[in-house]
Image: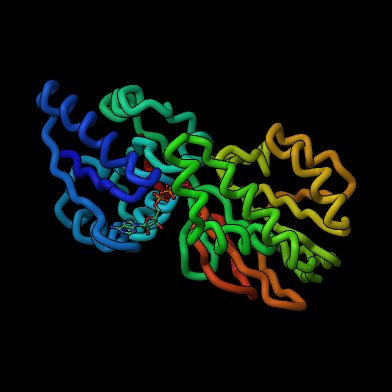
Length: 294
Ligand SMILES: Nc1ncnc2c1ncn2[C@@H]1O[C@H](COP(=O)(O)OP(=O)(O)OP(=O)(O)O)[C@@H](O)[C@H]1O
C-alpha cells in the first residue's frame, strides 16, 4: 500500500486542495493507500520513521521542498521509494527531477512504479535533496521562512517572488565574508564571498538555475561561489541566474566535488532545500545512490 504524507501548509494551503483531487483519483482507480497529515514542523520526519517499519510500497509526499527535506531526513537509509506530488511554493526538487507540476501527471508517474536511484547530500547532520545555500542565500531563506510575501505569492504560484523581495531586504545589511574551503583534497580561500551553493540538482528559490549542470546521479556536487562584487554588481548578475548564465561572470567560480569543509571569518547561515540548517562551520558530503524516487 502507498502511504501519503500531506503537508496542509505547503503552498499556503494548496497541498490540501491537491490532496482531495488525488484522493478521488485513488478511489476511482481502486489504489490501496493510507494518509497522514503533518501536524507541525518536522512532524513529517517522525511520520516517516514510523512508516518505514510498516513496509509500505512507497511514501508519497504531497507538499513542497521543505516536506521533501523532512521526509528524506526520516528515511535513515531505508530503500522505501519516494514519490512526490508537487504542491509547495517552489517545488525545486520536482523541477530538477522532471516530475510534472500537475498532480494528475505526477500521480500517473508514481503509479508506473519506475524507480530511479539518486544521490543526496549531507550538511552537518541534515540530509538535503536539492541545494545547500550558504551565506547570503541562507540569510534570505531564514527571512523567507517567516515571510508574509511567501503566502501571497504561493497562492498565485510564483515561487521565486518572496525570495526576490527578501533578497532586497537582506541586501541592505548583508556583508560578504571571507571563507576557507576544503573541496575534497584541495584547499581554497575566497574573500568577500556572497554565497556558496552546493548542488545535487540545478534549481532553488522557485526556479533559479544556480548550478545549471548539477546531476543527481553523478556522485558529485556542483558548487557555485559568488564573490568579490559590490551590491550593485550582485544585482546586475542576478537576472542571469534564471537561465543559468551567471556562471560565465568573472565574479562566479564553480567547482565539482564530493566533500567540502567550510569555515568563515564571520558566521554564515545555511539552508538545505530552503530549510534553515545552522551556521558555519559546515561539513558537507555526497551520499551516492541513497534514495529511490518514483
Ligand atoms: N501542520 C503544520 N503547521 C505548520 N507548519 C507545518 C505543518 N506541517 C509542516 N509544516 C512546515 O511547513 C513548511 C513548509 O512546507 P513546504 O516546504 O512543503 O511548503 P512550501 O514552503 O510552500 O514549498 P517550497 O519549499 O517548495 O517553497 C515546512 O518547513 C514544514 O516544517
